[in-house]
Amino acid sequence: MEQITQLFKALSEEMRLRILMLLMHGELCVCDFMSIFNEPQSKVSRHLSYLKNSGLIKGRRVGKWMHYALKEPLEGVFKAQLDFIRAQLAHMPLFQEDLRRMEEENKKKERCEEGSIMTKKEDKTYGRRTDK
Image (cartoon, rainbow, N blue to C red; front, side, top):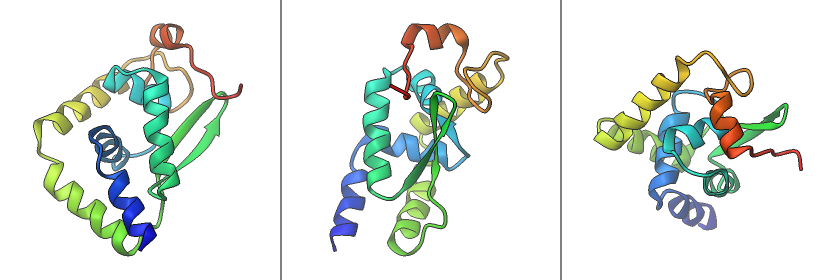
């Protein structure tokens, strides 16, 4: 029962839903979320940590940056809820805009690390490191 309660708490915040919707399209770096949402690293990392602790996502270090992806395989109530979220929210304007921003950022040539969509200019602005 505690696992289900934790799941619904994780899904009860807009930014965490937005993160999950983007991760359904593949792995992203913390800096990618910072750029897409135009939010500071501290806010993005707090929500990523909550999702990781709830068992929905996993993280891996690539150089000095953390990259996140959906935890695979998701089973039972986790899979059912993410399938429901995808079906209900995928066509909402906010999520469509997030996806458009992700695709737009992905076209930029400069990247903070391989696989990331953050530009060097944005990297200097935020300058967040995970290896401290």
